[in-house]
Every structure is written in structure tokens, then in C-alpha cells.
Image 1 (cartoon, rainbow over the protein chains, first blue to last red):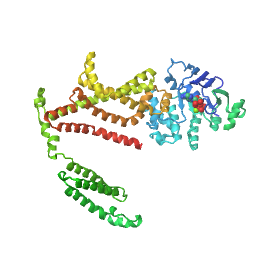
Image 2 (cartoon, rainbow over the protein chains, first blue to last red):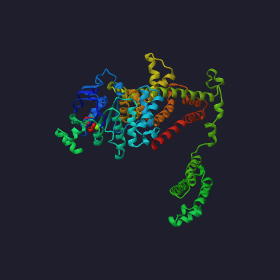
Image 3 (cartoon, helix red, strand yellow):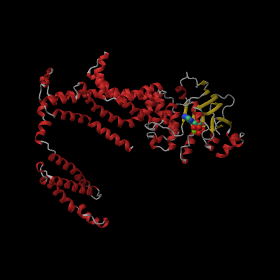
Image 4 (cartoon, protein in one colour):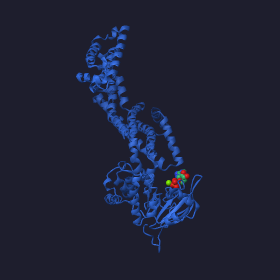
Length: 252
Length: 336
Ligand SMILES: Nc1ncnc2c1ncn2[C@@H]1O[C@H](COP(=O)(O)OP(=O)(O)O)[C@@H](O)[C@H]1O
Ligand SMILES: [Mg+2]
């Protein structure tokens, strides 16, 4: 298991109060309240269509929450007077389909946002970018276009691209679901190392091995509600809620 | 070569006579000789002559198909037969169109007309040759083209980006209205309306400005649609991952979407630009001395078609690089 959060004085990173989200009449998130502390690695699991992606996307306002508040480091990001672009630079997001920019090479993908958003000098951004590519193990592909990379390599570059903004929080939305089985491991390894380095992470994933190894908290999100949460051991070994048991029996 | 064909006969079965070189080589020579020396001249073209022409064409088509469909035949032979089609039709046209070919040079390629000076004796025109007038006209056309190309591109880019990013209902309505209206208006009509009716409203525009304005408005409407489809072809995931990195909508557009759209948009854009250059000719209706206007004046003054031919050649030569570019871009996009 990743390093335990310093339980003496946990620093609050994300606090969510009564988050609700409607798509027109469709009620997708039905009141979510939770707090995530610095250095925590939270795994979110639940049946498809339960609102996991929407939950993540509300937390950096790729989707507008319908009601409720989301505090990132005590700033309410649902307040429309804040600059959401500024907040997003602190939150990395990795998507299921990698979404690398196909017209740029791997290293250019990684450098783009630091140079144009953070105004880092290109040379510095490149150095940092190469360092990150080394960390995710694709240095040799730095000058390649996404088209020439395998799915696993693309996803690792996508992780490096997010890390290049030096985020404080990382969201992962099913980062290995689109990958061939033999490439899942390489991406999970990168995520595990990141978790061990103390990054605050929220991961939507059904990779049970990873969840047990790397995360210190599991949330079960069913039908727009968190029906159960706790450490992986608690949730997997002694689930309390009947619907949790039903769901786990399908995936375990 | 004949040898190798003979050897392959065993493998491919019997080679029909019309595919054999013993037939094809003599055929080419005899056919060429017959068509050049034996075909009746136009004055003696009776029913029998027409029949001969038809038979000649049918025979040629038959042999042409036989050669083109034969995988064993070398490319140069196929090319000769394909080229032969052009030569034969050229020859038929030359002989039977009834044209007075001896006068073609005088009426269509008369350099003497182009060298003359003093057309209509305007200003210092007494020393200005018609060549110079035509080149001035070309420059005027290029000026109109470049101005309206730049302006319409900027206008269309702005409208397309605003439409996608701001995505405001009312704004979109007006942009769509503009696009629909100006795609439906013929440019000649718009030119005349602007030129002859705006003065009543107290707005006086020079012919040049009128031309640029009308072409810009129409081209802008078309290009807006071209750009919009290019932008919308880029998946929304691309915008989302750019926004998730903290980019503003404009930055995501500039750094992520537009660079990808360019590849999609460039072929239709180039085609629109070619069309725009050709449509500068429509400015002749408001008496701008561009290529068509000048050429027609010279043509009727000298009763000679040479200026028109020169004008047409000017368009062709100016547009050749663009048409080539369009073809190459189109091909590259298909192969990508
Ligand atoms: N942009 C959207 N517009 C309308 N409905 C949506 C949109 N995004 C998601 N939904 C709906 O919200 C529900 C939850 O989706 P999602 O958050 O993607 O679930 P999960 O990630 O858990 O599979 C689904 O029923 C889905 O169809
Ligand atoms: Mg999802």
C-alpha cells in the first residue's frame, strides 16, 4: 500500500458538498459529499453509467455542476468569479482515449501547455518534458508523432503531458480501459510510482490489483451516489451495502 | 520482345491476332498513313466519307481497348495508343470543322495587334502598347484577388471561430443568415447593387472598392462554411484535453484545433481561391479595367480575338501553381 496519509494533520485538497448534476432531465449525480486529503489515492469504482466520469469532470468543471460546491484547496471552483483555467493548471487529467494532440510529437505534446499557459521558456519546458518522458519510460519516442506510438506509450505520454503542468492533483478516467492487456501493466506501473511519490490522485479504474496496491481509499459510486467507501481491505473484504456486494460479485 | 511473348504463349494460351506485335506494328503505320493521306477532305465528305470516318474510329477503339487491357504490353505502347486518340480527334477537327485555318493566326494569335499603341487615346495612351494594357489589367485582377482573398479569409475565420467558441444562439443566427444570404446572391448582381444603389444612400465607393467588397462578402460566406466544417471535424476530445490543461477556449482553438483543421481545409480552400481569381472577371460589369474588361474592349476595337486569348492565357498561367497545389493536396489527403 502507498504511503499512509499523515493522519495527525491531513491537509484538505478537495471538499465536495452536495454535488448534483443533471443532463437535461437525467439526474446523474445525486448529492455527493466527500473530502479528499493531500497525498490520498482514491479509487472510484462502480457500474458503467453510474456517473464516475461525470463526477471527475465536474471536479475540474469540464462539466458544469448543477448544484453544490467543490472546494479545491479551499477555493470554491463553482463560483463563476474564479478563473477556472488557473484552477485547471493545478489539476491534471488523463482520459481513457489518451487524446494526445496528433499534430505534435510526444515532446511537443508535453511542452505545449507549460509554454503557452504557464509561460515557461521553451528550453526549460523541453528539459522538464524530457525528464518526465524519462520518468514514464518513453524517452526514445520523444520525437515521434502519437500515430507511431502504441496505446500504452500514448497513455504514458499523456500522463507526462499532465505532469508537465506540475499539478497538485491528478484525475484518471479509466486510463487502461482502451489498452491491450499487455500494455496495461506499463501504465499502471507509472501510476503506482506517481502514487508513491505522494501525488493526490482520484482514479476511476477497475484494475483491482492496482486499487489494492496503490490506493488507500475506495469509493463505490452507484447511480449517482457514493454508497460505500473505505480502505480497499474494508470495501473488498467486508462490504456493508448489499449493492456493493452485488457489484463486487460481478467484478471480483 | 516478340520472342518472349511467343514463349509465354504456352503459359497464357493462344494470343489472339490483334494482340500480337506482328499485327500491332504494321497496324500503327498503315492506320496513320490511311488517316493522313486517304481520308477525304471536307469538300468531298459524302455519305461514304462519313461511313469511312465511323469505321476508322470503331477500328481504332477496338485495337485501343485490346492494347490497354493487355497486361503484357509495355507502357510506352499503351501511351502511344492513348495519345493517338488525341491526335486523331485533333486531325478530324482540323479537317472537318470547316474552320478557315489560314486565318486563325491572324485572328487569334496576332502579335501585331498586341504591339500597337494609342488605344482610345486615353492619357499617355498614345505610347502605351496593348501588351502593357493587358498586363496592367492582369495586375488589377491580381490586386482585387489578393485583397478579397485576405479579407474574406480573415472574415470567415473570425466568423467560424466565433460560431464554434462563443456559440451564442443570437450570434449564430446572424452568422448563418449572412452565410445563407451571400451564398445565394450571384456576385454580378451584388456588384451591380453595390455599385449603382449605394450612391443613392450617399455612400460612394470606387469601382475597385466595390469589387473587393462584393467578392469579399460572397467569398467570406463560403469560406465560413469551409472553416466551420474543418473545425468541427476535430473531435471534441481534443478541445477537452486542451481545456483540462488550463488553456482558454481561444488558445485551444489556436494551438490544438486550427493546426489540425488546416490539413482538412486546405484542399477546398485552394479550390475556392482558384474560383475567386476567376470571379474577378465579373468585376468587368462595373467597368473595372481588369483582364476581361480590357480584353473585350481591345477585341471589339481591333475586331481581333488575340487580346481575349492573351487574357485567357493570363488566368491559366497565374492559376497553374494553384491548380497544381490543389491536386497535390487532394491526393495527399486521400493517401493519408
Ligand atoms: N454530455 C452528456 N450529455 C447527456 N448525458 C450524459 C453526458 N455525459 C454523460 N451522460 C449520461 O450520464 C450518465 C453517467 O455517465 P458517466 O458519468 O459517463 O458514467 P460512467 O463514467 O460511470 O460510466 C450516463 O447515463 C450517460 O449517458
Ligand atoms: Mg466513464
